[in-house]
Length: 145
Image (cartoon, rainbow, N blue to C red; front, side, top):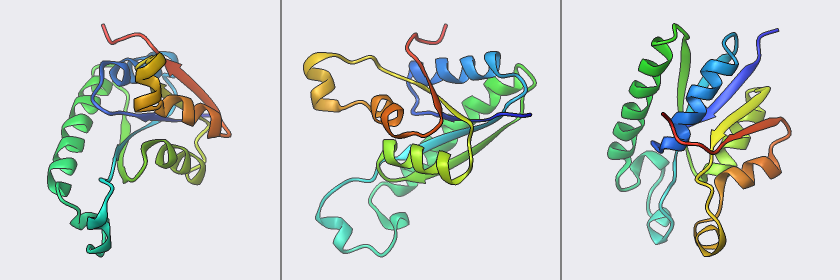
């Protein structure tokens, strides 16, 4: 049985390490690379009709394309096809929702490994995904080599 594996990317070395890990450890998996564009919060949301109208939308999609190009090159280097997709919203919520809705078997993601005050201030997407996802979540801490 082919495992469906979701790998969220954000441009960090940890996300790169997670993709490398997934490609190496799950060579027969169907891998989908997901980038979540975090929508800005604030009053502007009252005045736009769709997520595509938020300020910076075009730049966010351009950044996602750059991330996907790098992921596709990494996957091509080991002759492994991948799918790519963009979602918008809260990263942890969107990662879990996308994985559940699309019947993924596992999520492989990087973690910045923040501790103390940094963790309180910035939160932890990986921690939230681990707590909320009903499937296996593999958290990769080391940076890409």
